Length: 317
Image (tube, rainbow, N blue to C red; front, side, top):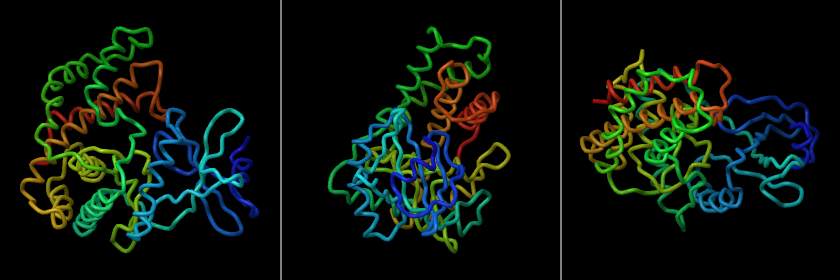
């Protein structure tokens, strides 16, 4: 079935066009244009449990509706289901496209402050849910899990030996003990978005109006959400722009309080987030089995090196 065929399982109106929509490295996404408006069609990763996705959606969607924050509000198929299962077993969902700006760095000081302020809002909102979301990816931000995956790969049948890089592996070995203990210095865990990179934050007139990709909502650490956003929008020529990072943290702290303490915890989280993602990209680079949807052969190893460099040599201090 084509994406246009699948769109008809959700929509009765005339479909004008279906085209690929730039997005993350996990899900395949299309923009569907109709006579009645625009929609987003998405094929979800095969490892995602649709029953957990629906349970979580039914928890966070009422809270988002009450707050006025925009979010992917799924629409049902003609049969009344949130997902359409194609003959090949793939699961698809659809939601109305909503206008908002997805910004690219560098951001102004005012926008960075607004970004931090918006993150604090979504964290506060998620911690009003009637129940705790069930993780779709239980291993997300679980560094011991990813390190075990990496070590098992090195002695397993799916390793690509020619892709290994001795300098990268030495850096992983030298930093792993510190990174495994980073969360001990965080505040208590709470419900978080889980993937607050800049591409998942929507702006209008300089303010945050909504968020994308709630599939990663789970119990976690707010510091890591903040740090992940800093990673996506406060890097300049391979180093952290400390003034930019501080402005984003200031926007968050003006809702949550205690700027100095929050800054200290986010510094730890930033190093850990970069290390974890660098490790994942390196594991992907040397494995026959791929997780990230990227095509350029050198992208994974270059991404891994840059992230591990940030983790070991630069911080938000």
